[in-house]
Length: 538
Ligand code: NAP
Image 1 (cartoon, rainbow, N blue to C red):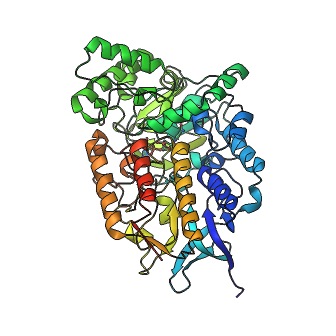
Image 2 (image 1 turned 180 degrees about the vertical axis):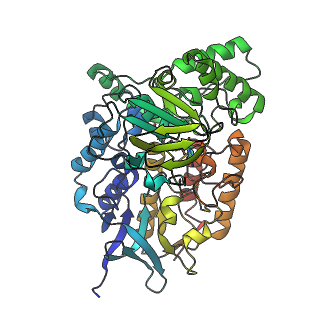
Image 3 (image 1 turned 60 degrees about the vertical axis):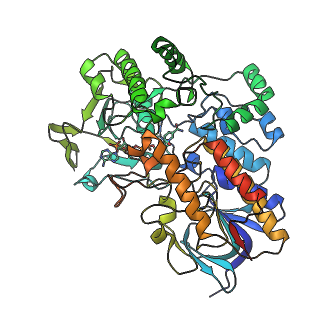
């Protein structure tokens, strides 16, 4: 067998994280390459090609901030840019900085084994290739392992069927066809609203409704873009200073000290403001205080009632099992109005559950729905799924999957004890999943780069997060989660997925840090300023 190819550093994943990470490492002069499982770059924005797929962060707060030239050259055409444009953007960045030469595609890592004697990682790829690397940095994403339900007869369905993550590259004809959508999370809500007027019949299979508020998308003219460019420093500074990492200032008044009519006035304003203003600019109490949350939920329920003509349908679209913003809030464009159309039918699975799939469609307890296309918008094995599918063996021979069986455990979402020389960007228990993603990953990539510079300049060949430091971080993560009403909800923020064994109801997995972007930034800054004393360096 030939020798594995060796590099000082290997980056996994050519999505938003990996693209910036490979730039920083090669700028440092490190011998680094990037391995990407897919046939091209873009990660999330390469894969999710379903109609309606777009940012729900303001486009100009989603782009990279590291290059003034890049900021000056790129024109975001919409306030919340769509998937094809986002993929073009990432390709533009990669071409501009000539990063493609560092990338290998169709290079899925199946297994990684730590070699203590040589102090390096041995990587085995699905295509049979083997690599070794002193350092491995992962940018493998938080929502990259789609999950399907397990209904009887699904394989026997004779129409077209796919998960939204695997929406085909070739256009899927929808006109005049009978389309089913299973799932009403952020993805389902985008796809349903987008295709409602394109299909013959649309049958939405809803197990539980989600709260959702208007996205407020619109074009960005040349003049507006010039104005945005002149404010970029201010925009990124606001993002860095706010809990969720967004360009929306927080509300400073206290909920209970603000008269009800003023609360309502604020909510009217926030409901009409594009993006996540309704989260970022709201009273903090709505996340923490049952009663405050109930008032907010009642307000949004009334807005749904105003928009849906049939009162019975409106009631089915209002969540009863969780309060507003206690699960990841999807933003929508005419989603509720879709249910006013004659060709859109809501099937409430809590009343009429699916019994089985048939070759022609879906059989519920109330009857059969004939379908030509079945779309699964059923979510992901979030945050840890992309780790679990690799066999990663650390110092003791135990796999990372085993270590994280009941939930991930990390130091600052950047390292995990027992797995030396492994760095995670957008790792579990960081703020990547819980705040404006690219803002969080830029901070993560910068930290990882500074750390690797520190290490390589000193000739350090092994590092490992200390077990006690990891324990302290887990306590911080748990405390931050436990403060929030969200802790009881069933969504991917709390590691819930009914289609993954062990991730179902009753099992809370502390997968993300909810202490906010500024607090997280302070933790990682202090860790560096303290000379990385929480990491054993050797
Ligand atoms: P999700 O939020 O996990 O929603 C999955 C949906 O599928 C839920 O409605 C769920 O119902 C339903 N479902 C799952 N298994 C089912 C089953 N066996 N039977 C019936 N229904 C089932 O997944 P997602 O919508 O793909 O969103 C995931 C995350 O991706 C979002 O929260 C967001 O962070 C990100 N995203 C972002 C954007 C954007 O705008 N930038 C767009 C899309 C997605 P239950 O609620 O009953 O479990």
